[in-house]
Length: 204
Image 1: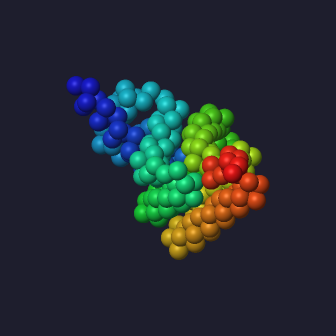
Image 2: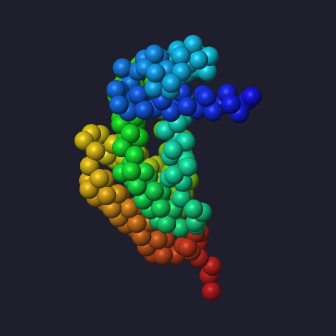
């Protein structure tokens, strides 16, 4: 019974996700979501009692796509981890333009709606934390700045019109920037006598 309820809720959230991608967040209506999911509006209200809850579920759906498709494999090298994350993320955006549309709609609506802003900020904070963890070998201020650069660049790349060629170019530039940043860190560590992990090298 529980599995069936969860499956129905997931279908409704997927329908809401499609509606936001196609019609925008201001045009999101419970009746449209019900029609897209093939259920009556009472069923939508049973699983998601308010538009706010529906929006939160759409944000969670986008975050789930990120987590499932853009999480890089384990690696001790920040260049490898971040580059893998960016390749997977931009491949996802290229293959599923709806994700970019949904993220853009949420960001724009967040400028006008404090409820949406709160939901988007929480999701973005999780992403920022993950990025900074990947960039941990860098000094904290540099890791924070680079995480902000990545987030802002990706959000800009999501703006319409959908352009796969431009997405690939942005991905290359971001990866190049990350690799250059890490190369500079390694060079600085070598000059200052630090070992590969940023700790002082043992004296002979």
